[in-house]
Length: 410
Figure 1 (cartoon, rainbow, N blue to C red):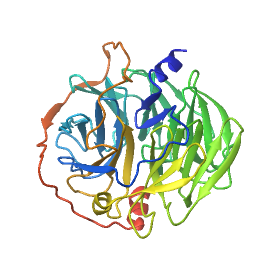
Figure 2: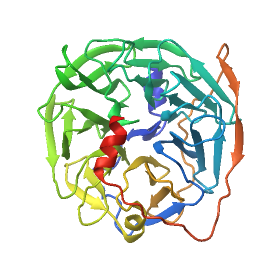
Figure 3: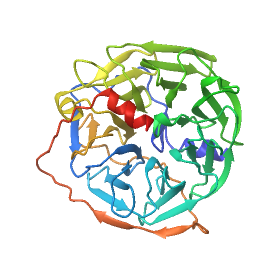
Figure 4: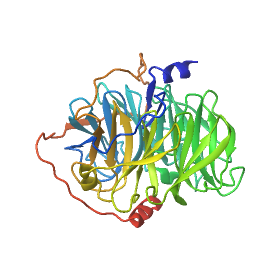
């Protein structure tokens, strides 16, 4: 009950970089006339993942930073002010999630996680033998979950942390090997279950599959297979259904309906191509991809009511995206798109029906917090970035999908 209450604070609930909610069925996706605003001061070396709460958008840089290998950007949704947080514990960060009071970052190269206090920007490193190349993090409304890359080593596939970042349990199962090409998009909660994309060489998974984990007791309750699922690298819950991208079937959006226990897919090679991040406003699923829409850069938009497919694009988005692939999150009535592999400023776009985000109306953070005692290390520094209100520097750097294949398989 605690988990369900926490996940239903508002009709739309942000879960780290994941969002699910109740919206008006059949609502139209963002129109192409929507305002696209580049957020100046958001240059990153390798913008791996995005997360959001009702106050900030958070972006993890896998390679930049001064205090360690990587950095964290905090973008104020209301003012667009940008702050960079450096800490020596950052070591190849790949995953990120926010509860509203804490931000958890996975350190892939450090076998640890960094926990950032939102109020103070203090960074605490949490170490545990349960962390084995951790690469993805989500917030389920009550606790954090970390996915490990255990494809070539042993260890639990999932690690659960409490609201302060303390390890409370893990999940080890022969069918559970989270597929690490999905960056921070390999798992998604629905309030009762955690859905995880997995790829194992043997066992009940039999290759690639969708794993259903009960949040309340961390038990694997189902292993689901589908003909278009062999290397699932994106899993996202929206509108009561589970949406998957697969690394072997670029032009399909695979859909699992838990209510009917059935699969379907939407395939369109003219719109969808190699997507690896998703976000939703409660009625529409938005997809960040590499090379879809061959004649222009676009964001595919799929209705969660009837699976109808459309696409978002406009001249500002096209000139900035320019063949890059990006991470997505939805926050405060806006879609946020981050260039994943381009040292450009700005790297972050805000896509809204209006030039500025709607005012704060909900809270997704726990109402109480406790001191995180017994953690391995504290420290960190905060360095403001200069947020410019004038001109934009747009550097269109075209990236081929082969670059992504090489980076993701490295």
